[in-house]
Image 1: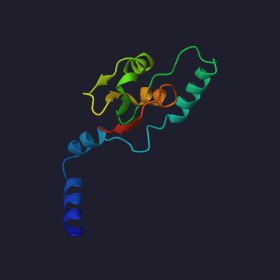
Image 2: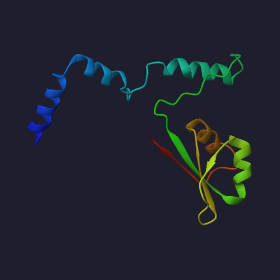
Image 3: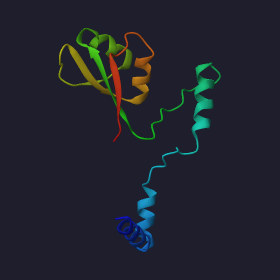
Image 4: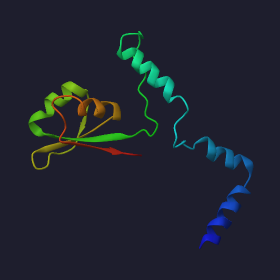
Length: 121
């Protein structure tokens, strides 16, 4: 079994260089892009009024979050987060899809979602 995986990996590495390069160009580095500390510094400066512009939102994985809220808190959550794509209500709760940044704001504010969980695409 291991030999099959090794043979496939070797065959892939022996394929034409342009195929390898094309595949690597689309690869996502699981450790980030190397600029996290710069973004953190800019976010801290902006938070404390030392930078004029808010840094751009960043999401390496292009994740979305489901947030689950009681139906009675739908309007308050929309005021807090802006546009949310809502799914049909179940058992008195609504589930909505939002960005990681918005989900983070929701977790730290009031009203809070009953639950949140990421969707990695």
